Length: 110
Image (cartoon, rainbow, N blue to C red):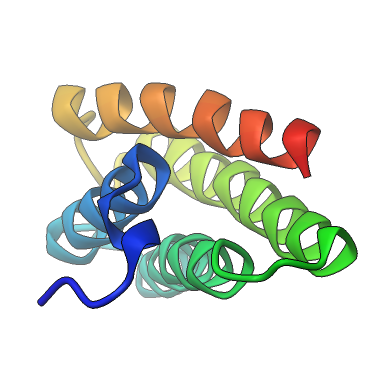
């Protein structure tokens, strides 16, 4: 279901992959699971709001929020691993390592 050009961009595709992976991740701490899934969804949805906009201020605001959500997601996963509530996921780690610079680049270019 590709309706908009931005749905083909690497940042959008990778953010969607991250959100799906986090949704499927068996985080045993309910608060951290909720926090991680909300942060992953927030990143994806902020990109979806910012990418089609022609106004740089709106783009910057949404891209900055998406980047903040990546940080929040990483912290929630880091804490979940530290307390033994989830095992490390190499695939998710690789996707997050791709996503952060993509969103950072969008923010710098906005």
